[in-house]
Each structure stands twice: as structure tokens, then as C-alpha cells.
Image (cartoon, rainbow, N blue to C red; front, top):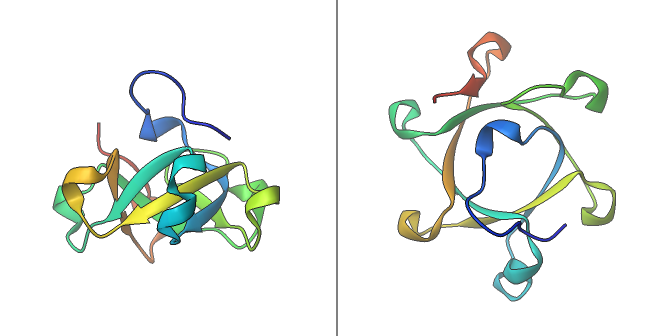
Length: 100
């Protein structure tokens, strides 16, 4: 998937997600994310679902092993200023969702 013209809406991203770490493939990703260590500063709190069928709303992501079969491919950056939005992982499903 290619990023749309304009801003990325992190609250609309759910389903199977492939996280890309190779900077050479960053341009082919839908968006750029930063993994925030603190939940308070994240735009989206993410819970990793084991089954794609249950990853049906914001913050519920099913990790994909392959970028070809993912609904979204996101590039993970270590520089917060280059990210479209920030995520924080939670171990509690009910905490997952958008902060906006």
C-alpha cells in the first residue's frame, strides 16, 4: 500500500500489520511509526491480536509475517520527529485504541 496524499489517520489502521525495519523500503510503506516507551505520549495504544479476525478496530493489530499479506505496512523509525504517529504496546486488550 502507498501512503495517501495528506495526513495519515492512525485511528483507522487495524487488521494485519507488517512492521518494516529496513530503511531502504521505507518509501513503500503506508506510514512511519515510532514505538513510544510511555503510554501517555502515544497516539495509539496497540494490542497484538493472535487472530486477524479479532483485529477489527483501532489499536487491535495482528502482526503479519509477510508484507505481501498485510493490510498495512508501517515503517518503524527511531526518530520521533520523522514519524507520522506514535504507538505504545499494551498487554491489556481493553486499553487498546486511539487517544484522539
